[in-house]
Amino acid sequence: GDSVTQMEGPVTLSEEAFLTINCTYTATGYPSLFWYVQYPGEGLQLLLKATKADDKGSNKGFEATYRKETTSFHLEKGSVQVSDSAVYFCALRPSGSARQLTFGSGTQLTVLP
Amino acid sequence: SAVISQKPSRDICQRGTSLTIQCQVDSQVTMMFWYRQQPGQSLTLIATANQGSEATYESGFVIDKFPISRPNLTFSTLTVSNMSPEDSSIYLCSVELGVASYGYTFGSGTRLTVV
Image 1 (tube, chains in turn cyan, yellow):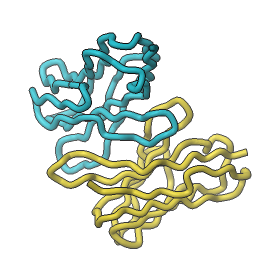
Image 2 (spheres, helix red, strand yellow; image 1 turned 120 degrees about the vertical axis):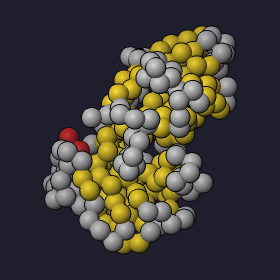
Image 3 (cartoon, each protein chain N blue to C red; image 1 turned 180 degrees about the vertical axis):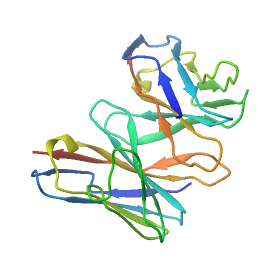
Image 4 (cartoon, chains in turn orange, cyan; image 1 turned 90 degrees about the vertical axis):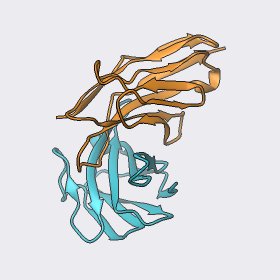
C-alpha cells in the first residue's frame, strides 16, 4: 500500500539556519503531495502542496519540489525563525478515486534564538 | 476554503464510558474523514464518512468501537465507545477543500484523556 517516510526527528536548529526535512513516498501512479504543520497546541494547517511531477509548492518561505524520479518531496527553508518551531508532516493523496491522506510520522522542529 | 468547528476541544473521561465528538463544516462537503493522533505519533485514518451511507472503516477500526453518523452534508459525529486508557489521543475531522485544489482542512482536534 501507499506509504510516506519522513526523516527522524527531532531537529534542532539555530535561527537563520537552513532547513531540510526529507520525505520520500511509495505509491502507484502520480499521487498529490502535501506538507502540513502543527504548531504547539493547535490543529494541522496546510503548508504547501504539489499535484504533479516537477511542481514546486511554496508558502511562508518554505519550498518543496515533487520529484518523481526519486519519489521525494523534501521540505526546505533558507532561514528558519523561532516561530517555525512545530511538527511537520508529509502526506500523500493517492491517484485515482481514493481521497484520504496517508501521513508520514512527523518531524519535530525546534528553532533556538 | 472550508472552516470546521470541532467540539469538544478536550475532555477527560472515565474508562468504560463513551464520548461523542462533533464536527460542523461551514459548507457542504461530500466526504468527511476522521483521524486519530496518538501521543507523539502521526495521524491514522479511522474512517471516511459519506452522507447517506455507512462509513468506511480502515483496518484496525470497527463500527462498534467508533460509530460515525453523517446526517447531512455539513455535519458528522464520531463516538469513541467503551473507552480505555489506550484510546487517549487527539481525534481530528477533515474535509477536502474542493476537488480542484487537492487540499484538506482539519478541525482543531479533540484531546481525549481516558482515566
